[in-house]
Image (cartoon, rainbow over all chains, first blue to last red; front, side, top):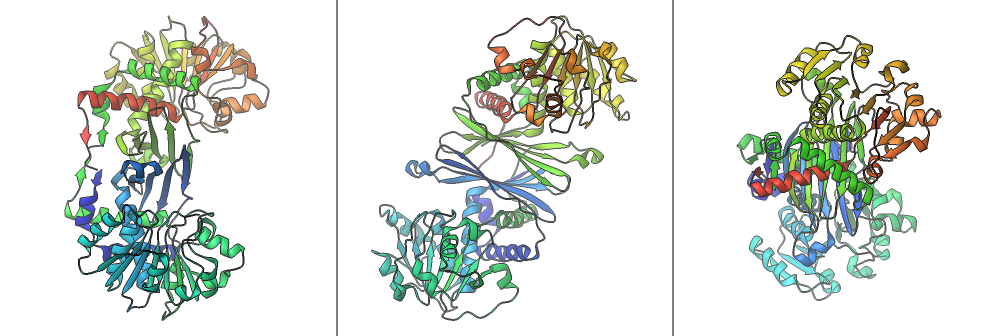
Length: 319
Length: 319
């Protein structure tokens, strides 16, 4: 069995290739040539284990994650884990890789694909609300998808913001990165707005003049009672794009406005459907909401694994 | 993270130590100082994925198995997989080992613990019905638990029996190993009877004179419609010992006789309860039924992992 760590993965694949793989995953999602059981949650104390299996036509795999919120205080990643790949015919374990870097990269790439398709080609400014690991990767992918020259960052936890910006500046030397004092300041100067918080109430204000005409990338809310977006946004939206139909059940940013009739079903389209029938999107108010799915993980992991085999990269585990 | 393969595991632990660890697991089971979510089954075509998590007081883990019945035809193991161990405080993956050898060893040891406690100390003869991997390990542990001098083996698939016996003879040079032509022949000459088939109807005959006074170790039936034992046995039994209460739901060898009133609840006791309050068992007719549980896996895996750390054994995976 081959093991691939963070360095191996970075040697094998570019950000653009990961976004291409995510688009491929969206097409597989549209074609229905896959089998994805419901992801499995196991709760223990304040912690969660996630088992995310998915079968493609020639390989299958499971992402195994641990979510330990207390790790934040210990300066350890909250999300940890492994991605396992298995032989389609025999079930034998054939590959394994760092699940936390795979999660960060594929989630960043899912946001990046949204930016590729649902923001103006000329967009130059991004605002990020929620300066954690997921937000960090969202920005790296955003800067691959568009020629960004300014980033504004906001987080209610201010103590780690300086380090966050500093780390980002190393990787994005040509981008001006600014800490926003208020969300209003951030909204005023950002054409694209990305949210990656774990909030249970909207983090953006009920101010239509600051929301209209922008592209919103919602990553944070992954439970029916978690919300990042305010009621007023839904009256301004021209279109809502979602990664899976399941997002309407799983995310409070869709479920709550749908049940309150602030959002109508006919405004919502899956990315898979959009990609097979593209329309031009200019100066519209768009909300792109992702909750993620195991299909993304196994498609990206297979690409990385295939490249590793081809290039003889990785650590061989003697099973 | 440390990876331990079959050879590492054999270097680190003896059969007797594994049986001791299983007794320890039964005691933890009795004390309730653990948390074991229901095992998770995912079905795909004819195949099954199993996720078996369990939390102890200082470590947790998940056994990940694939059950691919068609592998038999390909001369590959039907059961494959990995055992993952995680740090209790942070969730970080710390150890991993061969899941098929762990399963075979712990299941063999669970049978062995049954033989330690529920068969006469003077028992010298064992009959095995079902000559697969599980049966193989059951016999190795049986010969550790009692001074066995004769083994009889029966399987309806006769073509692999000679190889099975030959392989066993290498490991048990002082035991006479005979292929039984019929189950009746096997029963006549066996004080202990172990069944490890995947049968949906009883494999032993409705003949009380061949069943009375013996110790039966039931390993095979792990679904509510799978059975190895005949109706008549339940009228002969003095006592039934089970590994978990859940076995009464999961195994047709308990569920069906219970629902037909052939077996009464007051005859049934868990091994955990028995071990805290031992009684002598002489010449009784006993049925010991195991369906297995993740607690066995994590307790045995922790012991192996701790020994590996102490002795610097295993392959270090650079996460």
